[in-house]
Image (cartoon, rainbow, N blue to C red):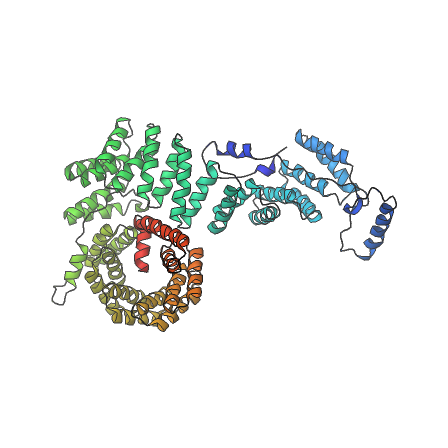
Length: 633
C-alpha cells in the first residue's frame, strides 16, 4: 500500500529521501468506534436504544444535521480491507470497502481507506471525493487531512493540498514530514515567508536531514536573510564534510547570491573531494577569479585542461585570468582560438572585446562586441570585468560648456541601442565598470538619448564619480523635462554631495511627475530628516508607507523619527515591524541596540548589536546587497 503520509518532494542530496523515509511512521490508521453517536457507557443497558431512537427522530426533522450511523462498520471487515491494501490487492479492497460504505455511509474510516485505495490506482478524483467525505465525518482527524493533502498533491491540486495539510498540522503540530512538505510547496510557489515558517517548524520538531537544512537555507537567501542562511547552511556543511555533492550545492547557492567569500570554502572542499567533477572545478576556478586570486584560479583551470576538459567555458575563463594577470597576448591567443573553434558562440567575442576595450583598442573591441550581439548574447558566459574605465570621465568632459560636440556616426541610432541594452545588462549584474564603458559608447553614438544619459549616470554614481553623474542627470532632464527618474537620481546625487536644498527640490519635482512612487517620498523624507525638518520628514515617510505598507526600510526610518520625538514605544514598534518585514536590514537592529543600551537592558542590547554587526559585514561583502544599501543611504 502506498504510504501517503510520507509523500514529500524536496531538493536535496541523493540520500535525503532515504533519510526522510527512515524518520517517518507508517500511515496512522483511523480508529473505529462501535458506540452509536460516539458514546459508550457500559453500566447503562437502556442507553443505546434511547440514543438510537433519538437519532431516528431527529433525522427526518433536520436533513442538514449529520447523524451518526445507526450501526457501526464491522471492525473485522475494516481490518480485512486494510490487509488487502497492504498486500496490494486493491480490487479486493475496493469491493469490500464499497460494501461497507453502502451499508454504513457514515463510516469515516471506510471512506478514508477507500480514498487511499483509489489513490493507489491513480483514480484521484474518486480518491479525493472519499477522503473529503472522511474529513467531513471526522473534521478533527489530522491523519485523514494529511492523507487528503498528499493525495491532492499527487493529483496536482496544489491549493487543496495546502489547505488540507495546513489544517492537519494545526491539529497535530509535531508532524515533521507534513511540515516539510508544506514548506517545499510554499518554496516551489515562491511563497518564501510561509515556506520559512514550516521548514523552521520541521527543523524545530526534530527533522534535520540535509533536505531541511538545504532548503531552509535556500528560503533564507530568497528572503535576503543572509546571516540566517549562512548559519543554517554552515551547519549543513559541518555535518557533511565528506559529501562533495552537498558541498558543491551549498557553494553554488552562495555563489549565485554573490556571497563569494562564503562560497569559496565549500567549493574548494567539493573539488578536493572529487577531482573528477568538472562542475566543482569550474566553480572553484571562477570563485578564485572573482575574489582576485588569479594564481589559484589558473592552477585549477590548467588541471581541468589536463583532464581533457578543454571546453569553451574553461578556455574563456582562462583567457580572462591571463588578462587579469597582465598577459594580454596569451589571453588574446586563447580567446581567438575559441572564436576559431566555435565561431557561432558569443562568449569569446564578448570577453576579448571587453579586454581590448579596457586596453583602449576601441574599434577592434566594438567589432567583436557587435559580432557577439548577433550570436545569442543572452546565453553568453562573460567572465572578464574591466578593473578601470574611462567612460565617466569622457562623458563628463564632453558635457562641459565649451566641449566640442561628438559627431554622430553612420547608423548610430541602432548601434547606440545595442550598447545601451548591453550596458544595462552589465549594470543589472553590478558590473559597473563594464557598464560605464559600454554606455559611454552608446552616448557617443547617440548623445541626446535621455535614457542612455540616465543609465550612464547611475553607473558613474556607483563608481563614486558624483560630479560626472550629476552632469549626466542634469543633461537627461534638460532633454526630457518630464523625466521623473532623472529628477529622482538627480536628487540622490545632490544628497550624496551634501546639497540638501537642491536634493529636496529634485525629489519634489519627481513626486509632482509621479505621485504614486513610494521611493520618491522615502528619499525626500531622508533628506528632510537630516535637515532637522522632523514633521515634514514624518509626513513624507507616512506618504511612502501608504503606497508601500510592507516596506521595512520605511518603518525603520519612521522609528528614527519617533526616537527624535521621544516617543520610544512607537519607535520600538516600528523597528520591530521593520525586522518582521525585512529581516535582512541591519539598521533597525542598530537602533534597537542603542535603545536597549540606554535603558540599561544590556543582554538585549548586546544581542541586537551582534546581529547588526553580522548583517552589516555580510551586506557589504555582497555586491547586490551593497548596492541596495547605497540606494537606501
